[in-house]
Image (cartoon, rainbow over all chains, first blue to last red; front, top):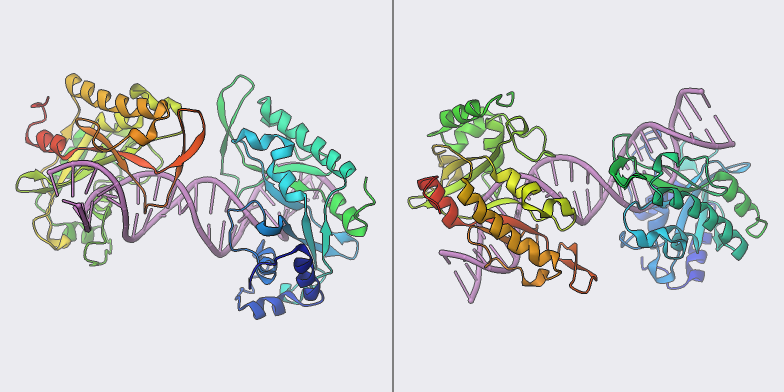
Length: 220
Length: 220
DNA sequence: TAGGATCCACTGGTGGATCCGT
DNA sequence: ACGGATCCACCAGTGGATCCTA
């Protein structure tokens, strides 16, 4: 399938998937996915990405580069999102991405298609796609995301990486991001020494996506 | 097999392999290698490395970290080495490796066990291991290697990467090093811009290893 | 012959996220 | 519910070198 040419086309495609089960969608793509219990992290995002015509160029800044739009699947229960949402890695090298205006995280969050996945049934094949929501932050919302970003990036820039915890940030937080606890990436201490620290990524707090999916303009 | 505890033990093990065929050595290691004509680049180095008790930690600066010794297999014909010898990649990031004294290439060349492989027969299984030579450069030899190193590193440091060619260097040269022509790594131009260039590695010229294997002290 | 191009196995990092103990 | 830990597939980069054409 070709990538969607317009944002409206992307939304139309995603809307057409609402109500279908993931097993059904995977089958119509010819994707074979094991029934492997719960070892399927990340699988649904890839199924949806392909079902919508994305996923050809993984080096890009967006899932749909031509329309500068990011796709995020969100697991939801009766009360809305049940989990935080991974955005991107925190670049400890590459200082041009340490300014909000030119950051990966801002680029990705500037236009996001949230696709809810109902997770009430235990078997992933029976889980159903929800109604999509196209989101772009209001100026007021972006100001808060920027403040969260600046706080943690400021700590890293000051060589105080060890003070960065997932407790920081009203909507955007930083948490470890690695296949296991063994990976390390280079950063610099206050004294200027190069030390190794665990790789981290930006995440949207559950409370943020819950509010957005209820009413995109209700925040802050 | 445990790694050799001393340099003498490494030399003794290598000497014991002299005269055996590669097929024989591979079989006694339980290694299965396809008969795949000439698609076996790099295979012999790995066979010998395992046969001598190395190869457990690929992140190290040396093949035998405990004794700070590097292993190099050298294809030889009746007139000696027939090919140049790869040493290591040229680090375009990591300025601490751009000084000869702290460079990877100096560390690797400070003690090398050269193991010749007779390549006169076309079938690699029939090729025989030659008599090993333990080599450390004399002060005069090292001065020339350093001069070769400084010349190319100086060009990269000055942002003149495009002037670096395999023609430079009396004994140590720089050549492309990549799986195909498509790989790129970052460097900086004279004007300070970041541009992409092909990854490169340090190689010992054939004329150098030919002379060393004839008489390690004959040069310069 | 030598400078530039290429080959294979392996693995660590990345992108997609969810798991799970407190 | 939250913060830290973890899971899988994929792929580019690395380490081991030799190929190949002018």
